[in-house]
Length: 240
Image (cartoon, rainbow, N blue to C red; front, side, top):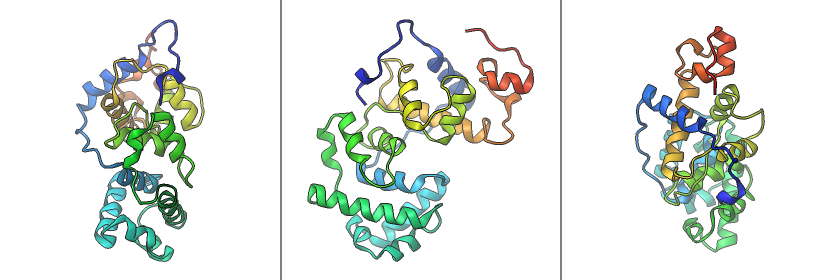
């Protein structure tokens, strides 16, 4: 996304860098990502919603082994695609979205690739991707940030929504609005790789400590800055 869409506050908000450092100290530096080409990342991200990361990786490997080329996946019968991705959640709808998207990409560009997106501005890429079924701001952010495109964007998943709301960084909102609010807090010095690292840390925190049910607030490295955790544990809230 173009940072001009997210004007910075007059007074610099340093909450995200402080949270980032606390999570780094607690979990250590995430394993560096090996960026994929945009189409592979697009397919992975379509499959990953409400599905564990390890399961999605397994299904993606299975698709590559079973179909060989993405064109073969595109041209396969819908029932075969659904069977191939049956381990992800909601395989029936995801099979429809996946086949339709791959067909439409081919029609619109003439061949099945997303490499041409490298020539576009980030906001144009995201708008273009979000026209396909099942693609929202989370998927478009993942493609532009995690793939070899490596653009500045913040992939907001369900963990990110939960953690940032409990921290009081954002009010309850969808992924698009939450990303917009958070990007206003992101330091100008954070490049695409730093935003990817931040996403990974928040995601791990949501999986390990700030879980949906029974969050481990007393063990949380962000407790002193978290209104939700303070209420749960009666711990003192750190003044900003």
